[in-house]
Image (cartoon, rainbow, N blue to C red; front, side):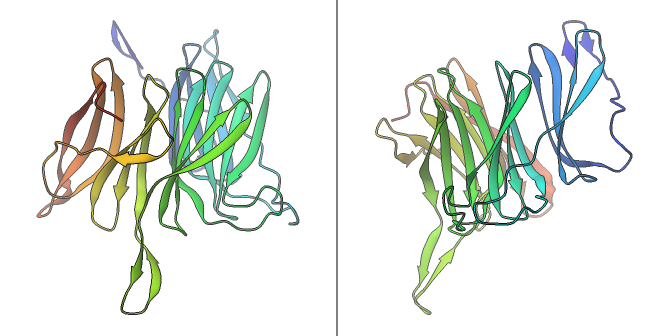
Length: 280
């Protein structure tokens, strides 16, 4: 953890050996380091936080209820996860690998509110696609929570916005296309890595990795709620693993420019800026 005096490293000895997976997110909750991670032993998510005394405490994020009309089964949460810190505590978007659902868990006071928000119909439980692997989270200036996520079945990237307990969904971009030779619907690998941030206006900016073409696309939300592509100023060639950083002068888009001869190990970090006021 960084401070004006330098960096401090601390080992957190709270998990059983071998139980911590690579799926992990970290943030500051009321100034205290907070870590969410997938626990392989329980096939679920735990959250650890250092309190005012320096003691690390662990919470287990409750599992969501089963889909309507389906018998209870143990979900497999957290093979993909993202976290944002709200005033009351963490908000975590996680993938349920059993049902292919996007799950949103929000901590309020001393309890968690957990719900399936994409991948199944909330009333009938009918399957609506393999959603939530991966996802990204952002907290807006007005307290809105926005989740960007991939629907692998439809080849789409979408955003889900939670406002006053009501969740709405909007398509950001689609990689669905028709194969003329077979007259069948195909889907590309759009959204294999995602990043999202919210502009001062509250509109979303989403960066998406296109695994089919190995490039990064950026889309901005318009005042009407639709999304339009934002042309970047980066170099040509393959790019992967986008991230977004909001600053006063705009949003920095960063990605790894891959070296075709040497693969990911030969890549370099590349950045360009979406200037403030340069979005729809």
